Amino acid sequence: LDYKAPLLKAINAVDKAATDVAQYFDKSVTKVNASLGIEQEYFLVDLSLYNARPDLQLTGRTLFGHMSAKGQQLEDHYFGAIPERVLAYMVDLENEALKLGIPLKTRHNEVAPSQFECAPMYEEINLAIDHNQLLMNVMEQVALRHNFKVLLHEKPYSGVNGSGKHNNWSLITNTGVNLLSPGKTPKNNLMFLTFFVNTIKAVYEYADLMRASIASASNDHRLGANEAPPAIISIFLGSQLDELLEEVESARVAKKVKAEANLWHGIPKVPELKLDNTDRNRTSPFAFTGNKFEFRAVGSSANSALPMTVLNAIVAAQLIEFKTEVDKQIKKGTKKDLAILNVVRKYIKDSKAIRFEGNGYSEEWEKEAEARGLSNIKSTPKALDVYVKEESLALFESLGIYTKRESEARHEILLENFYKKLQIEARVIEEMVNNQIAPACFIYQNELIENVKGLKDLGLAQAAFSSQLNFVERISTHVNTILEQAEAMRQERKKANQIDDVRERSIAYDELVKPYFDVIRYHVNKLEKIVDDKKWPLPKLREILFLS
Image (tube, rainbow, N blue to C red; front, top):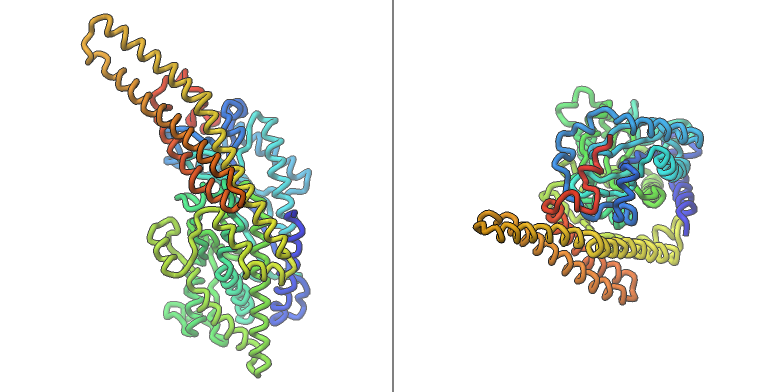
């Protein structure tokens, strides 16, 4: 039940399938390595403030907290210098990483206050994932030396961006050719198009499996918010390549590139790609960025092995199907290059629905995606169903990655992990409401009541203490609501715990328990704005987010 064995099997499957297809173009190709570069985002929080927040300690995220007046709106953190204390941590981390052979290459501030990113050089996929797992461990160890705590949770704070882990994936031959890098000659162009279009077709055919591979309780907070890719899997190519595929499909050259078009069996010359022509759409979950595909929907705390097992498996299955179709045409007497082009054209047409160049955050895209027949699975329990669907079981079994029993076991474990995380969060909310927040509010409310009594005793008119009375009423309303809602949530949780079926229990937690979280958070945040700062029992986001 590990991540490593299935990953190695998927890598082996894509190696064999890609090598067979690459030999259409170059007989000297005997091996294809999947390459991966993992960008790791994270938050840093001062250790003493972290220790004063039970929610951060037990769940990895703040369950309450009114957003700081100043957040990320000025973009001054993203474009600013790295704070001195953080830089000292980063340098220490890089030294420790290099001792372990982890080739960390970049460091920079991210969009949200106290959010940062590091990324290594690209490596063979198995090694890249090992290094990322090691890196997350080292990050936490080194942080303690600097009195920091690293938060790898996808959404530690409501109101500012969450964290992701962009997976940059490509295929490299033993002859040193990146199969996803546009070629300079027509023949190389056809090779590029073959692997490029097969990857698009694979993601189109197995979009739900890609969605399931990144599903988790913590990533649900991030996906579909205006900061991360939506739960709809679509592919962004950039206008140049989108146009190119249109040309190949219709075998007509667009007028504006006619002069430089070099048609060879209907293949236009791929213009030299400038990165800014492709790396523009930050709203896409799966984007082509020059010479690789970037899977942006992976969560920051995730093990990349699962999404990469799925990606390599679906591309392997797609390439096997492609080779079968091409060989069939060659047997009928079609020339090899023409046979390849015919199948590529067919795939471009078949997978058109998943290509999207617009704003993935917009409501229009949700409607458009539905019209195109694309799934929009917003919750983890339902996203995970695809693991036990016939086509997924058949895919994994045919490639020797998972048996039927292994797929079912993984499905159950992921569901169990999901509801247990929500169960912990619900318990922490109840505890904090009853033991910390309500008592602090009562103390302040009593002070206000004493104040009102004193002013009344002096014989002042009610107008003199109407504001205090208003505060007393508002505190009463919000405190009553959070106590009632916390109790209602507890009852709902008890009911969910009685459900034996793990999928049904997960859905109950997701649909019946989790909605209470936001209601309680709303009222607690209102109380935080009213209650005396000295009496509020938790460090506030304005204190946590701005490191000095």
